[in-house]
Amino acid sequence: MLRDDIRLATLPGRSALYIAWTTNEYSTPRQVTQYWPTTESAADTIRFLAEAGKTLADVELHRGHPGEYSFRTGGAWSSWVRCNLTNGGRTLPDHTEVIDLPAPKVRKGIEVRYRNGRWQKCLRTGWQTV
Image 1 (cartoon, rainbow, N blue to C red):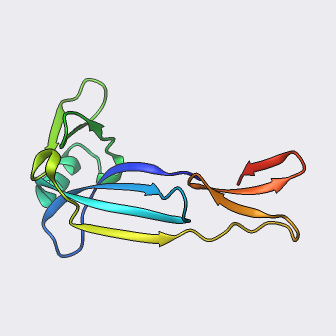
Image 2 (image 1 turned 45 degrees about the vertical axis):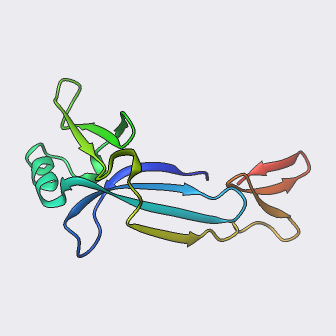
């Protein structure tokens, strides 16, 4: 499964709020998550979201200008909150996590390969995404 995900996150022992970007590498079966620091306080944002009945996992981020993200605090008529990276579009990630993606289990004799960020298996009809 190809995963390209942008979400709000925190890191243990750090007070900043982060934009976490997760994607699969195209040629190697690995998933990479990069954590980009923002100018927002994690504690303040979590408290603000709790007052609106939300958690960090509930937030859907929207990209704006380079280094700028925004999210809604509630429903369709709620206000938008802007979240900026520390150095705008020139911000570098503070932390990177790499996870190996194991080959999926398939019946004996079925060939599998990792291609374009996804595992595939060879069937009589051709290569199919697993």
